[in-house]
Image (cartoon, rainbow, N blue to C red; front, side):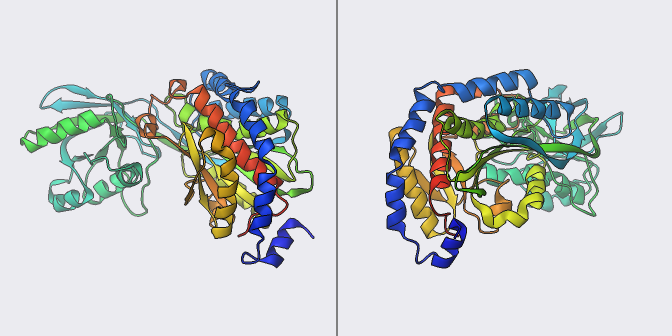
Length: 455
């Protein structure tokens, strides 16, 4: 009887948690070997150095670009050279948005060039640009109250930073809300907790049957300045030029590598991050770090000549930034195998000092992962919280597959997110070693248990 069928027969209530705890405890020496190799042994700084070589060579890697495809080719070669198995790419059709030249200038009450970044999927302006008076608002509600003042104007949102999940709504939906009240363009305060005159880009969503208008992010400093000007009753005029284009979809690939399981090779524990990035900075933090600790998790296991009972699979997604297009394609290609996916993991919120893992799963799964996390006590990464945060693995977790995402001390994440500041300077070699150890220990132990995680 396969391990999957065994769990189905036993059921969650009949799951022998004491047996599994003993099994986990007996693997503590393997966990210690993985931790030592990653942090003190021959693999020290390895994930950082690999990421630095990669990002310095290719820089940013936006979906649809030839540069991303060249980077994927390189990654396939590196994974093969590292001795991993079944290295290949899997096709995914992805958006192809091109920024082009762009600029924004405040003409009144004084001349002032605005630092800006157009938002993904934005249309361009006419060649001569759009010159219009500005209406500055704090909230969507304020825009509704002042809707009679918005026609023919450029709406500037100076929303307060609350947290990323809350404030990002203005970046995603600001253009549509402004278009509904007759605005000709929108400029959104960058979604960040700290700015050094730094604009942050990201995807935005037009809605059906609403006029598409050009949209971009400006800096916190400029948004606040125009807010102050508007409160004094000063007339603000801005000229916006954007040559952005939405081109037909093109073919890309998810990047896949494995360590084949010894006993249940058709059952899979998946680790992942996305290889694409925005077209600014180096994409080192978002999500080079997550992608490369996922490679490193398998690499550490391979370097120790370990082979778990189940297959360990790393998937480096494509076109996550535009809306998980790579992950969606992967789901369509593998959804009939959903019952064989034991655990899916994703790192896409930084690779700073790790504190543990966030989990989607039932109580029995939570208890098992808590037990595994005790093996990470030497590096103080034992925290287990409910509710994973991975966008790409939602296709699996929403169908009942247990999932996990890396917890780390990422308070500074929004400072660099989707900006020119996302470079290797943000990354720290020791922190990446720690994250790699967490990723490898959890993935290996889950994959090497006799039974799959309960659902």
